[in-house]
Length: 349
Image 1 (cartoon, rainbow, N blue to C red):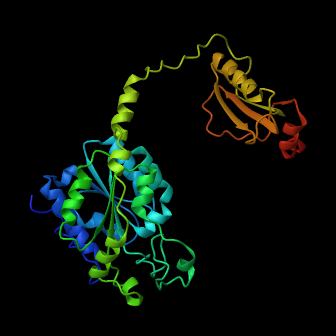
Image 2: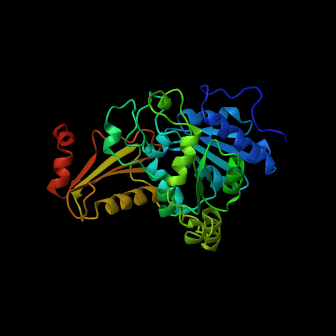
């Protein structure tokens, strides 16, 4: 196949934007590896990098800002036969930092391309997590107060196996991308580029500057050896296959007839540690064994052995569509904490 680019939606970026070079390098890498449109999913983030999914004639998913890796993880786990490529800007990287770290720790086979142009280009040129401290950006002096993040060092420290830096203007960028795409695990490519619409209006940055700045950075650790381990999806499927198949739920046999018909509402008011929830479950089981439909709603705080514990139970010989209780037929009050929690309801009984 000559190209995976979408002929009905030609790529359009701002004049001089380096994203265009990354787009074509990615296309050349994928086609050179023999991938067809049905073999690839392009998952994109918000921002200028989010245009990639519309420019490729492949499967695509466009997500929320910073969340692209979460969708890509689900796609890869469900369809390990697909090659999943994620494009994200430095803005999305900062917003979705926790997702980036989680993906590094998992080592799931995804390729993350960070289109790093040192600012939030689409929203006005504000500073991002990679903006140099001496840059002039649309958010005033704030970038001077924060140290820019080294994407590759963070990714490698978090567990990513293949991490690399590149310039969008490198002649061998497609080879760099091919290596990342072929890696059996999580790969990250930090691709430095130019945002002519915002960043370079106030900051001098040229392909030559980018090359020089990249050359000044210390060499990356051999994270591929340091973080070598089984790819997450393979490890997950291996461990899942070892698990015992859970038995089917035990059905509740009807062993008696309910003494009353219609809808009966019961509320148990108690305190933590009194087994209020268990008592509610027993009432539901008793109702089910009498052929009734049953619902249970529980209310308790996050604290353990302290606070209220309330269980609301409904038994009915018809399906229960509304689970609210306003006028219970039975109130079992066992502790002041639970009574206080439902005082307004009790006042109307």
